[in-house]
Amino acid sequence: MYRSAFVPADILIPATADMRDWSVIACDQFTSERSYWDRVRAETSGKLSTFHMIIPEAYLNDAPVINMAAETERVMESYLSAGIFETIKKTFVYVERNVIGGVRHGLVGALDLDAYDYSRNSDSLVRASERTVVERLPARMLTRERAPLELPHVMVLIDDPEKTVIEPLKKKTGSMKKLYDFDLMEDGGHIRGYQVPEDQIVKVMSALDTLAGRGVQVVVGDGNHSLAAAKELWERTKKGLTPEEAAVHPARYALVELNNVYDSGVIFEPIHRVAFNVTPERLIELMKEKICCSEGRDVEYIIGGRKCGKLRIKGKTFGGMIEQLQSFLEEYAAAVDGTIDYIHDEDAVMRLTKEQDSVGFLLHSMDKADLFKTVISDGIFPQKAFSIGHARDKRYYLECRKIK
Image 1: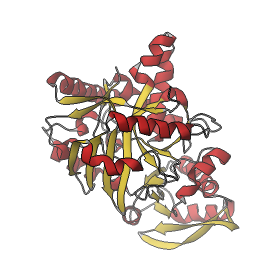
Image 2: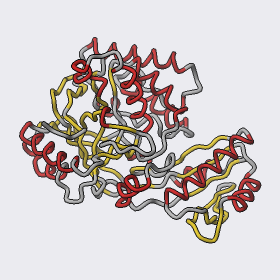
Image 3: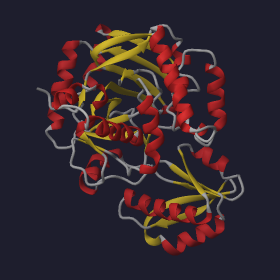
Image 4: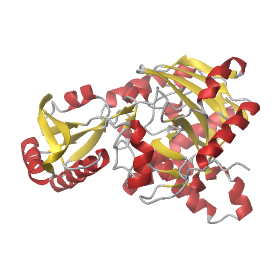
């Protein structure tokens, strides 16, 4: 009996779609760059595409979420009825994704939500990496609750310095069935996926069992809130189930991509902040008074599209500094009816801060080797503390799984 929280799944791959049109980036990317999503919408119009099964956050204010969720449900049902999917039974998909700086290697499979707890002081096998903002969960829960399918943009990490779980598969692709091999839209790089055969699944699960013995096996890297929404819905669902029913219910699991934090293609990038509808000079003045000190960590601030200086913010650790910055920005924005957005690319920060009444903050990246140590010793990071890769390196929707 395996102890791992990550297990094989029945995975659906489109058999009749143009894969480039089919696969679009995670819904929580480019939220302040609507033009990106407008291009994707135009390109996928009238075509089989995951775009029609998601709600880009850039569009959340366009209509009631319940109406948009009903439309995504309708599309999913129509795709299922049309039989566009091939079902790959009880498997992992081994993924090679060309990203900026190299190749990222991963495994798509199912994560056991019973082994996951996103609370700050969790001691579960699967833990969050950042603070969960409960206000962000209802829209995600509504969308998932109605959906017959799930599409993963969640990326989770293992601490495997000996590279025993995923990396051995790199030499086995010649004997694996290739499921897809194509260029992703909007400069997303190239992606290849292979069905992992049964003999290799056994080896993967054995290696994962070894990691499970360390206490924490998996830390969520990207998609914390989507996974938290899945967890909340599962907790609600299983209350009406017998133990036998709960053990096999599809909603107990969430489809994710598993990556090794030591993979050379897993690159931690900072997530920058831009505050809108604020008075930049006053905001900076208050920051200097309240959260800056001679000992801390430096953050550059941007006004009018140019770098104006650095602030040394309190915090003994990277996470502690972000906690100070985040708390201050949230409090200030609430007081003046401002907003905060989280931006992955420095160029986008420079461009967005050319708008009046805005100020940006450029953060530095975190040493990825410290991720598990910090989660174990200090608990979760603040919201949006780091990102796996650049914005266009984020996971694209591709594989699906039935959750009804």
